[in-house]
Length: 382
Ligand SMILES: *Cc1c(COP(=O)(O)O)cnc(C)c1O
Image 1: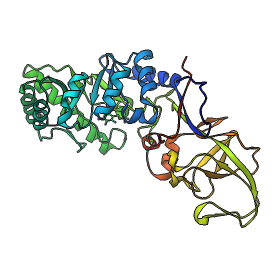
Image 2 (image 1 turned 120 degrees about the vertical axis):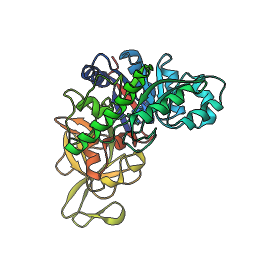
Image 3 (image 1 turned 90 degrees about the vertical axis):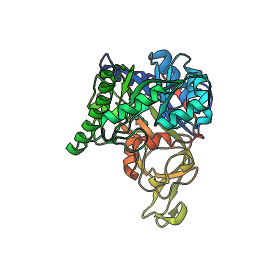
Image 4 (image 1 turned 45 degrees about the horizontal axis):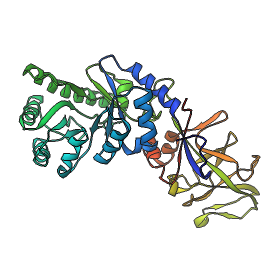
């Protein structure tokens, strides 16, 4: 998108593709030579817009592996990245098996039965990576021993028209530094590597073995993983807010809105629905053009802060669907001024992780939740 293209300056998200490229360079340096990035671009690239993000990753960063959650997303990515390898991590109804082969997409396969149902629905062959559940408890082959797991992988390989190109697993707690969780992740990692090694001993050398997500890429990078499925750190957020991420990785999304109205209220005046805020003195209040329908959560009512000309201003009263009010006492503001809900302004910065922490979620949900109504504006394309 042309960064200078006019758009309604009400509430918008600015995405820095330059910072995306920087983040990707840092992730490349974390990985060993045997590991390539598989860019996780599900959910519209975590709310950042899949087309510009994928094009940047494919054309500017040389990324050739992408992961998505479903067939619709995969077909979209195929359009932006003609020669990329695209893996669907989640479920595809078997009746759509034909489309996966038509678009040359790799399907995550969770069982022998599922593999059979896929080939039953198409005359062409299906490329797949077999998902092993080593402790996430979500999807995949689940066995007590890696030998039994390898047996089922072999049975899947024998199904006509199934091409098994790799195996993978997903860590449940790689974003934790508690000894208990580290030991748990160690066991998950050992299990999937054992399955791979057993298959190799049986004469089956799979092209791919992958288990690293962003957290593992940062804290337990392992050259055995042929791909690092990097999601959140590409977008510059923390897998877990309590742990540092590599220096130089920064959020690529800022969220902005404008001031619609400024007024002075008197002691005793109420602000917003439910009259949860009553001024205890004379205050200057500004109304901002963003609300929960834009994905700025109502859970931030009376809790969140917003940067106005580099100064933090508190939200007063409830966040409405399209608007919210802030205390701008002592700040020079006028109607039409831009404010920052996520991002840098002056020396200060509010991150999606910080907002998430206020209302008990994770940065992932904050950025994915910025709604469709909010145009994404791409800056720093050079
Ligand atoms: C979403 C997802 C990822 C990416 O996780 P991040 O924490 O964002 O890096 C990797 N693998 C699977 C299976 C996923 O579902």
